[in-house]
Image (cartoon, rainbow, N blue to C red; front, side):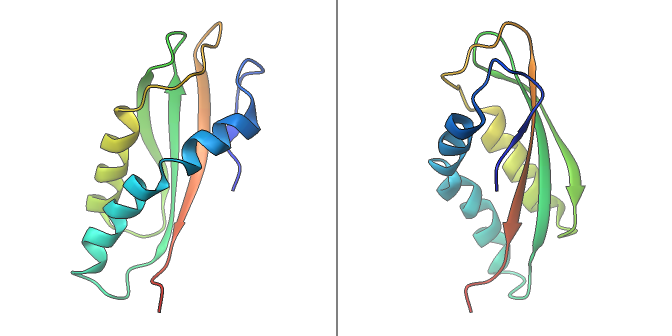
Length: 104
């Protein structure tokens, strides 16, 4: 998926690459809960804000079709710790969907 970005200061393709490079950390949130619930699957849409310093200032869950708060909380914590190479003039709000399903 590609991110929705409410700022022309942040290149969508570069941001998508940035997020994809960190997917293993996001995936680990899901896999930890998948061990407890083997049928766990669904989409979680995360909205976060990139500040002018490149740091993430806010992270919210816009949609949680999975219904698993532990996965959502873990993802929020991982994203909140990111420091991006993007330095928008003002806060840039990003919306990104993560879709999870068991491999088997």
